[in-house]
Image 1 (tube, rainbow, N blue to C red):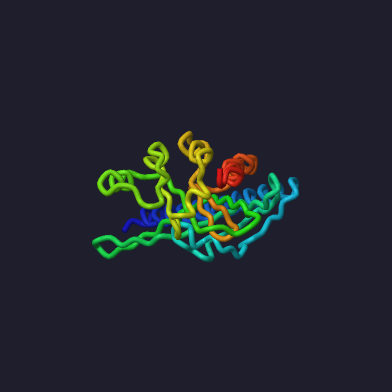
Image 2 (image 1 turned 45 degrees about the vertical axis):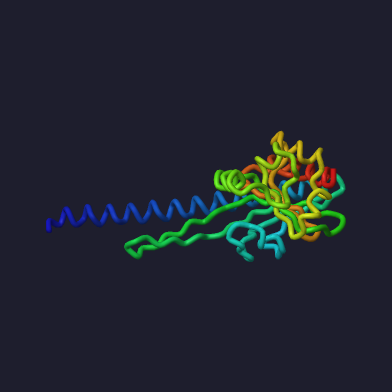
Length: 220
């Protein structure tokens, strides 16, 4: 092969490696700046910043990754201890030609710590299959009997008799209006989550407020 061609191939390979290294270094620096911004926000507002905390609620998260919490910020809002955390899990899929690929899913988690433990209950928005199942088979024993709520939201509980003690007409109306998120309670932890990462610390109060609204309306 022509020496000039070999030299150009070698130069191209070197350039690709250099660009790859630069991209990694840039990503590491960006991530460091992002985490430091979150740490600074927590310090400024009197919250605690915790690296890799040990928590119980990962069993309620997609992927159920017990080691998936990379950071958490803990503070007090409206008389409740509140945590805002980042959680992730990695999914591996295989194709027909035996190749595998991995995808990491990121979530922002908000936890409101209640004053006393309660029943195990979860409220999730209905997807297309859940709506179809309701049409075909009717409501579960955990349904409220409010068609506006039951058509949009699905309730799961260990004891169906406890549901109405947590979701009264006021909270149901907030769900119907779309002002509060999906949530679950287990022990003293009221939890919700959404996909994404904490890129802007200024969003934290807005992330916390809807779940605090749920906490204030439990039983109403």
